[in-house]
Image 1 (cartoon, one colour):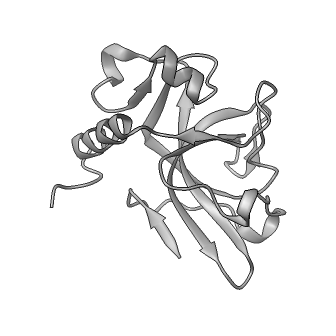
Image 2 (image 1 turned 60 degrees about the vertical axis):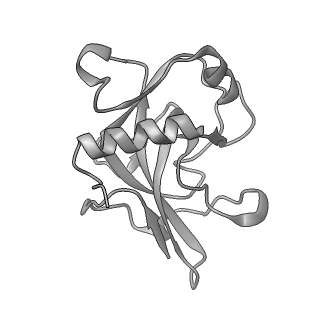
Length: 158
């Protein structure tokens, strides 16, 4: 089963290499949730050292192996509002930062996505929060996300 809001042909890490993470209810995070992960470094297959926010843009699950993967857009604190505000999702409202347990404003780079196996090596809670899933985008944030994806040509109006 595959669910995503973007079409990509990027390669991803083989799902059998890592141990799966169990979450409440045994399900993968949902589309448009913010999760905490160790973004790949170097060869793109090695989990990074620090835990950062990422936006779930898609998911897939193999019911036979009970393994899954997430398509994520990386979060960065380098807002670059002048150049990126029209094409990337920026969350900087104090209440939303608090709701999502984000310690500072974040820009989700919608042009940079990775398929990552849903496993402990890539997904882990940060020191300041006990859960991997920080929360879901609000309706207003999802509407802004759709606008950004249209501007990038990733999705089209029907």
